Length: 165
Image 1 (spheres, rainbow, N blue to C red):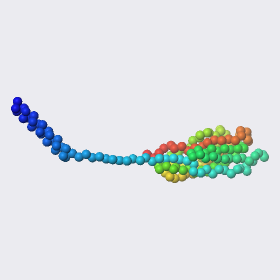
Image 2 (cartoon, rainbow, N blue to C red):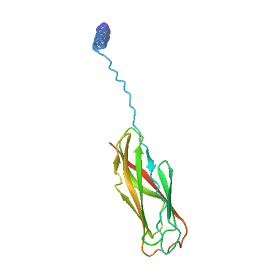
Image 3 (spheres, helix red, strand yellow):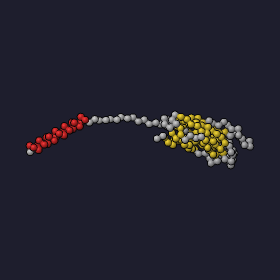
Image 4 (tube, rainbow, N blue to C red):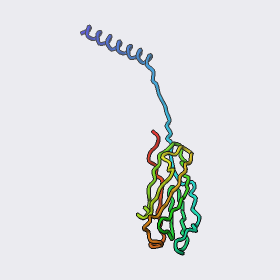
């Protein structure tokens, strides 16, 4: 019995010495980090409203095309349009964020089927804190009856499609 007690005592002391040795050689390593993410925001910086057109057809009242801008949406209103009428509306969009972004055009309110809308030079990407420009071309088809539907309005906006990975 005495031998078993001595063996247990030696085993406990050995484990204690090993634990103390391991603790003296061990070291903790801590890594602290901070991550801040960027952001992006797109808006119309400027839209050049077309001047009142002097275009007339058979004595009709002159065509008017006006624009209203609210951050990322431009609303275009056309009054007194006639067949084959066309107008160009230059614009500049701005990314006020800190990361590049992809953009796509979408309608808040779509135009009528007889009005073709083309976006010439529309940017696919806008760099951080940068601008890009294009031109919206509106063309009435050849079958639209002059002044048949009164003023026509639709809204056009740029939406973010991607962020840089």
